[in-house]
Length: 193
View 1 (cartoon, rainbow, N blue to C red):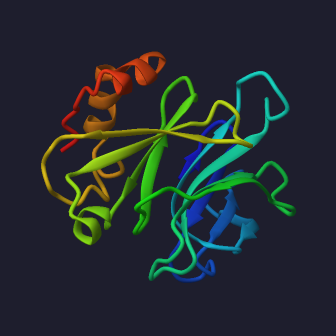
View 2 (cartoon, rainbow, N blue to C red):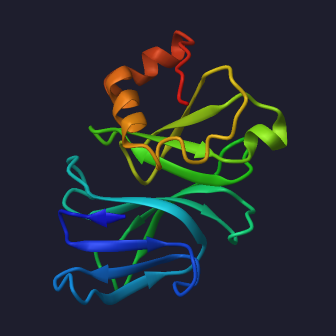
View 3 (spheres, one colour):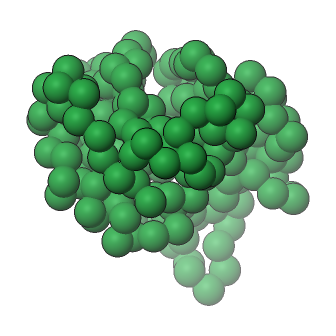
């Protein structure tokens, strides 16, 4: 993940970063320099933004992370971190969710009020149809699970948004984030794959 506003690259998971996040300054793009890391949990994927919503996090660099105890899984969560000070990253919140198997990836809506999270293994572990969980993250310190979208199709959704910008754009256009609560209450189904 590259935060183009701040000029930092956030490398999640993998070898060499102890499976958390390694943060590199891109001030000299030809030679990125390691400036910090967070290794409390395995981070499978993350999205980092400079928070623009009024409140105590306004102007801070916030990481929305899909985390596990290890790269093999365990205790899936949406973890939200303040990564503004690369030498002293702090946890804002850590949110578990029901019927979790492997917190794989997610993304914020353009207005940054909602986070869509895909659990890669919930379909195979629990027999669900493909579902994307929706969290209200307007207060990063207290995310609220709102429900999920489902297509009614059974398939793993681990990379549905991360690997296809077109899917992200289609979902964002189809579901205006301002209407996420009303869509949920209307039991509207959305095809994600």
